[in-house]
Amino acid sequence: MFPRRSFLHLSAAIAVAATASLAGPVLAQQRVELLNVSYDPTRELYVEFNVAFAKYWKAKSGQDVVIKQSHGGSGKQARSIIDGLDADVATLALAGDTDALVKNGGWLRPDWQKRLPHNASPYTSTIVLVVRAGNPKGIKDWDDLAKPGVSVITPNPKTSGGARWNYLAAWEFAKRKYGGDAKARDFVARLYGNVPVLDTGARGSTITFAQRNQGDVLVAWENEAYLLEKEFGAKFDVIVPSVSILAEPAVAVVDKVVDRKGTRAVAEEYLKYLYSEEGQDIAGKHFYRPAVSAKAQAKYAKQFPKLELFTIDKAFGGWEQATRLHFADGASFDQIYTRR
Image (tube, rainbow, N blue to C red; front, top):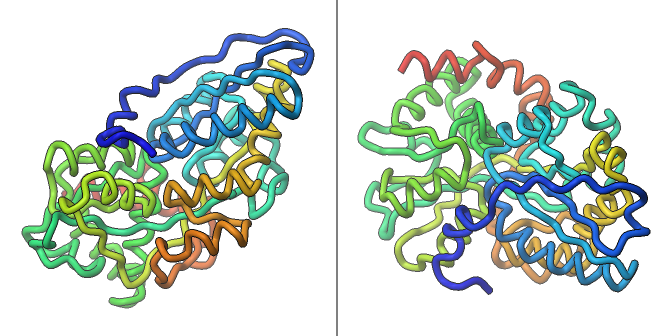
């Protein structure tokens, strides 16, 4: 599918690209450009999906569409849109980052998550652990990450959506195993005491672990872990923890931008196509869990391990509460990490 080493090297190949301003109704034009502002590990997924959508849109409308990609830590990407990056669509790591676009400048309407199926999450994922071949530190579950002498690689929850899923997965594991939030806080503090560097995004952490050879274990998106294992083969092993979080990346049209540029029709169709059979198949091919297609779910079922998954809503009361308690300035992560 991709030449060897392309998985990590796409990080440098895909630049942040601002779209040109397009005057008039886009359907009257021969060519239209969209900018998809996304988070780190979706690079390969959207490279393939964009080609498929361009063919579909050309056949349907007769119009050429060019989709440009921008990738980085999800929180950082949301901030870029708030600061004026002309994103037609935002395909971020978590609904909380997309909600920030509503609250900071009204870039989206508040009902954005009701416009598409499955709470605007066309694919899901979870968080797993990646270790070096042979698992020399004997990592079996979350509790091993807080042991002395274990070096853990995970990105910064202040800038990365994947890092927030990582943090909350570890917190809920500890809360269940040790009993209560106080014990969970102590566990997570010990875990982050083993983190030598916080990259701004998930792909940066993957590069730190795989190419710079730092750390004993990488806390990673499931799709990122299996892409890494597929590319590097025997160099890494994936460890599936006893429990993890159901990660639901969300997609949305950026209302303020598409209405100004006249790209709403194309942008809406772009996101809807993620729910098509072809879109769902491409998601499964790139190790995301297809959310709505029974055919794609059955086709890729064997590559996804069965494990207990909890949701952000049931475990943490949703993203607004989780952000306030854990990731806002002065909240639990700041308190834990600044006291290291």
